[in-house]
Structure formats: structure tokens, C-alpha cells
Image 1: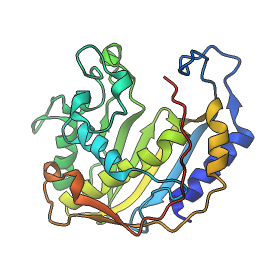
Image 2: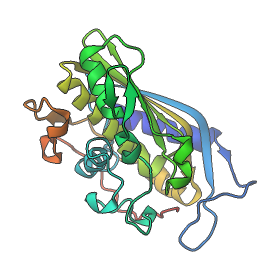
Image 3: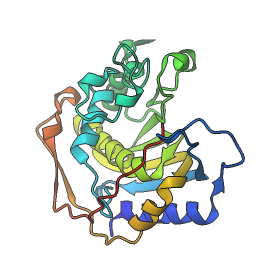
Amino acid sequence: MSRADSLFIENCKDILKNGVWDTDYEVRPRWEDGTPAHTIKKFGVVNRYDLSEEFPILTVRRTALKSAIDELLWIWQKKSNRVSELKSRIWDSWQDENGTIGKAYGYQLGKKHKYREGMFDQVDRVLYDLKNNPTSRRIMTNIYNHDELCDMQLYPCAYSVTFNVSGNKLNAILHQRSQDMLTANGWNTCQYAVLVHMMAQVSNLLPGELMHVIADAHIYDRHIPLVEELMKKETFDAPKFIMNPEKRDFYDFTVDDFKLEGYQYSDFDSKIPVAI
């Protein structure tokens, strides 16, 4: 069983056994038929993954790694908010009349800010500090810009990353205000594990630990039978993660520079209802 499987199953069991329902409240999300999409949740879930030991990908179901990386590069490398520049269709229902998700995600990472050393956007500032100030305790990004939340189609879920160098290893903490455990847990974990690998390689460091801090880890009411089904699936060992070792510029990476060797996973063909 992979570390990702172990934590996912443990988290879901805990949520279903000890979680709190929001059925006493009016909620924003709706199912396609207009019914309120209620959740059961745990507050303050913290998961740790040692990236030097294994790559944190689920095997109880397949994670489409290339699609996850495509979204990661769309946000962190292209710094885009234009939905047409994303190969998958995961943001289609959130795009505005201009074909964007508003001033969210990549838009925020791409905004330049004034520092003593000059003008940087948030990604370039991280890259600069990892190479020039690796002992800094100020290497972080934050895209939860209160001044422009009103111009975002969706407030950022994964909103902040804190990077920290320990010896020759790069560690990171991903802060997430909200996470749909069924659809997003494995997806986000893979994405930010890849980001740590990328940042480490271009900074002459080794990947260390990824800590994932989730404020509201929830399971939607109509997802419960699917989660219960997943928790009974056969699990496998984590596959080997392979990244092109020749890439030394963060902006040179493409989706084709990443692959998994020996990825085994259980079949999961159930259609997942989507709450909007």
C-alpha cells in the first residue's frame, strides 16, 4: 500500500466516523438537479509525505498524472487564468464571459511585486530565494488576495505554499482552505509533490518532505458510497516517479518530462457527481 493510499483511507474513515455534518446550515454548492450539496467534514487534517521515499499517488484508483501536471504548469509556469490554455476541462464550469477564471490562481502568481532586489512575481521570487537565500524562512507564495477576491470565479482552495530548505533537501507546506476528498485529495497531493521535485531540481536541491495542511477536509453526501467503495479496493506499492534530469530551468519543463514507472491501480469506473 502506498503512503498516499494509507493516509487517504485513514482520513476518509476518520471523517465518516467522527466528522461533522453541515445539514443544519444553508450551503452554497448545489448538485446538477439543484439539491443542496451537503458535506461531512473534519477540521485541520495534516498529512506528511517523504518525497525522498516514494511518490504520493493513490493506487486505489487511477490519478491522471499528466492532466494534474498540466493544470500545475498552467498555474505555476504559465501563470494563466485562461481556460482555453488548459488541456483538461476541469475549469470549464467556472469560466466567465471572457473565457477566464477571473483574477485567480495563475493570475495572482504572475503579478509582479517590488522587493529590495527588484521586481519579481511570486514564482520567480521563490526561484530567486532558493538559489540565493536558501536559509531564508520567508520563501512562500500566497494567492488569497483579499483585494481581488471579488474578481475571482472561485476563491483559491490551495492558496499558499511555504518552502523551506533543510540541509540539501527542499521541503514544502501546502495550505488548503477546503478539499473535496474524493475528487481532489490525490490530485492536489500529486501536483504539489511534482512542484517540490521541480523546484528542488532547478535549485540544485533534493526533494524532501511535503506537508499538506487542510482546514476543511470533507466528503459530499452523494460521494459517500463511492468513498466507501474506494476504501475496499486493492492497493499497490507506489510507482517510481521519473522526471527529466536535464531540465534546469523551471520554465523549460513540459508535461512530457514526467512519467511513472510501474504504476498499478484498481479499477474505479463509477461516475462521480459534481457539486458546483
